[in-house]
Length: 235
Image (tube, rainbow, N blue to C red; front, side, top):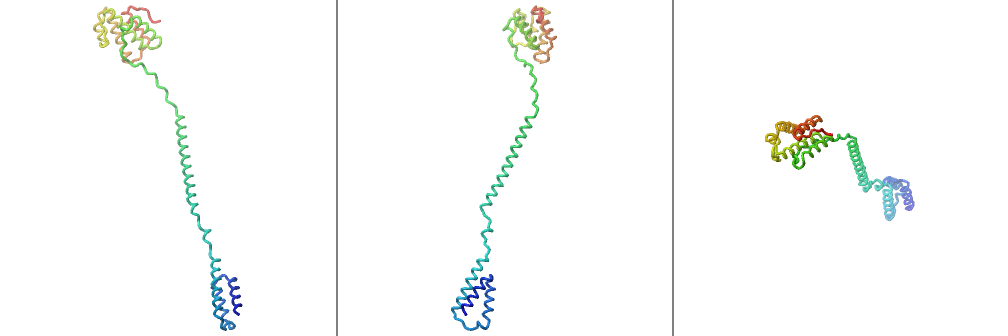
């Protein structure tokens, strides 16, 4: 009888997965009249052990494994680094595009036209006594042919100063003002008048930096000729 009960308990535990249901069925069976006779204590001990083992096995089979549901912790930092790398590359690309566009727009801008040539800056007069009056006159004609009219008038003025100093009509010194030479001029009256007119023309065109025309050079040469006695015009 005991072995039949054990076999029945084993069969029920396999068919029924709920241990409480198995115990309830065994209890109902054992309450029947045919099972009310006294059984040995060892039987009940073996029955309890068998039910305990089957109950443990059923719980293990019914327990849901948690390992597959766990999220790997190593993947999160890796995903974050990937996102940061993509953002950095986008920012770098935008920065390079902005630099290229800026350089392209600056290259397309029209350049400012070159500055016009600056007229010669008035400077201290060369020493008129360093050359003969005729040499200064020849240089004046050469400058005039080159279109350097203001410099040509200056050369005529230097020629007159050199000539007047040699004739002792003036006592040239670089510290003296131009009009002082006119006031102290001791030559002929017409020559003194010519020297005054030539000095005025020279200061207007050279120090005043006013445009000098061809007619003004020819007038200056006529004034100088009245002193130098050089009557031929420029070649």
